[in-house]
Length: 153
Image 1 (tube, one colour):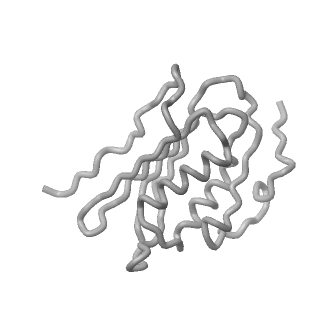
Image 2: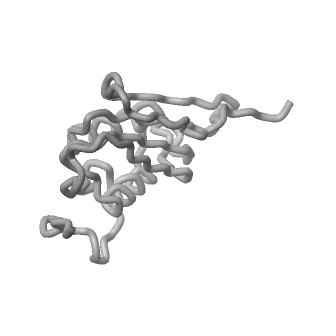
């Protein structure tokens, strides 16, 4: 089976980190199994962005799950897109939900969810969750595997 990658601009090429999420090119490839109900997971344990007020770095562990339909996200473009947030100022909720909405619009999957497990800022961790709707019946949903934050004490 051959996958059509003719429309991809980043895979196999030296690609600079996009200056912002808006400038990042997220790319997709045809799903070779569009009739199969399955879950694909991307985990980004070292996601970074900037606080829009202080400019200080924020860190998160992202878990993106989706049930593909006709399209798969091309992983290099996803890595570059997520990396583009490292100099982007936005609140945790905005980063997490924006990523989910953009992937959902690009892929039009059967279902998509994102969990943003943000490390503490000011002593308070923030976890942000978004999903496109109810998961399809029969879809196996593994636990995200990220424990609730536990500080000292």
